[in-house]
Image (cartoon, rainbow, N blue to C red; front, side, top):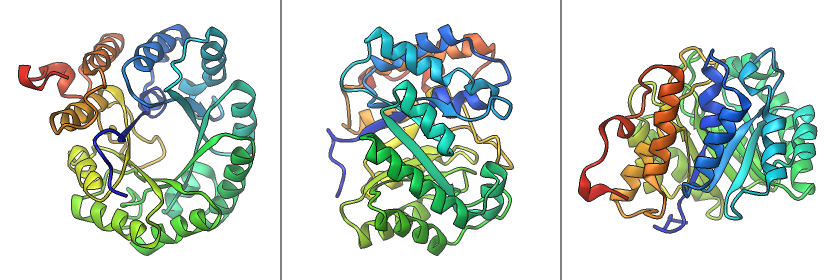
Length: 308
């Protein structure tokens, strides 16, 4: 189904995908401040963190505490969903215990990336993730499954579309129809994006499609527009353009949330989202890390006629 101006979803992943690459640890109280600002910006879903071993990704060590703090405060707007990335059964157990509302799980279409990221091959990882997703759904939680390295791999290069679609079909056969394609290495190009998502729509027009692009080669926003044209309704992005996968060869930053919101807003989509609020978070992040971050709008501002 083609997305309409009012039903595009913004899934902010900066507190997870954005911060996981940063060596400077962000204190829990600072994360909570940014989370609160984002919760009142108009974005629909916020990825609070991931449940991974702190030795692998130290920045995510306080994910349980963040969810608990937001749950105890009762300040989360009803129209905002808090999500988390889960890689295994232990992560699901932790997420259920601390109040995760939406579980994001994924399988890489690249054998090399899959083994570096999870220690498993694609086939084993697919079986495991589908089982975990089923448990999360049975617990009454929202579930989104993804195909990582869907458009190419930093280690292997081209990833065949047929391999990606085979994983998507496995998801659909398991009753999982909220599916994201992630450009983990940032290799996607617009015509490839349109072909891939159109192929998915061709064999299931009711699938809820999401996209997650990295800006490794400067094509993130263009690919997001191509996804929109193909009918994608949910867009994952990171405030200030922070982030990248630590287990891929070249960790390019994410599509920048404020740049994405600005682009879609000037096209008439989701003008309810408070761009200035997101820019405020980006500015605070730049000050915290002591450097300019990859995002554009927070540094240049927007033309007066484009203010939203």
